[in-house]
Image 1 (cartoon, rainbow, N blue to C red):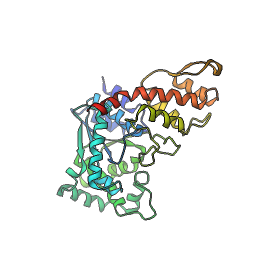
Image 2: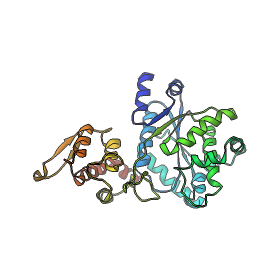
Image 3: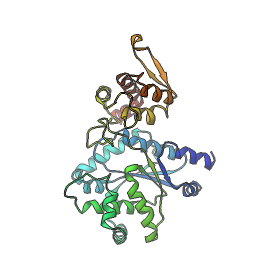
Image 4: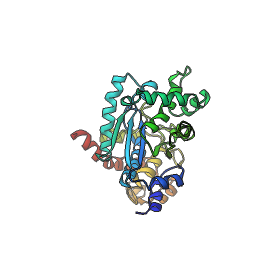
Length: 320
């Protein structure tokens, strides 16, 4: 596959790449490194899976994949004790493997390098370059909102920037909530004589309750190891307003999971309600927005798809 084809494939399904010309140069390297950091703070869900799918695709294209299990970041963000977080990190690593990342993937616990002198030195240098206002703004969509924010909230983004240097990252991949921190890295790493990564941003899934972000802390998610009955119950209870496309989590699941994997979605319904339908993505959007497809029929189809789609994950989690 030539570089142009690789660029097109990587760009597909993303919201932003900063920037394409730099990524083209990275693709010429023998083993460029792509990374994503995750706080070990709960269940791995469909929101995480969007970035994992992109990492897996990049791995297939020859990238070395590093996943940071950011235990200290989770601690700074109030996600539990270090001991609790490290147990969650073990579970999260198993989940990422269940989603198909190869044995060549490096899983790195943040605390294994984030207390080293050279790392601390970089954090101090970055602290002299970053205003408090900028650091706080970069955390807007990442941290828990609080009336009394802690100093931890401004240390967190500086550490994340230093992580990219320490892990020798060529490409930083994350959801759009990571954008402000990643742009901060692009601006400030060259100022301390470190290379800025290419940044790739993937879409955020709305929560099943209609919240702007699917989150394990809010309980509005489909976990990748949910049982069949849990998937059905969660989807049936989910926010799916009639005729509405924007902000509809069920439509988003179809867009990000169904149609990248199959051409059409089977809608099963009784003849008295119009009979079965097989819809492409375009047809689904048109049919649903016109009101010809009832939300419950769409929900049933999505639940059936997800149960099958996540079957291998459930099997891996049970048997490994």
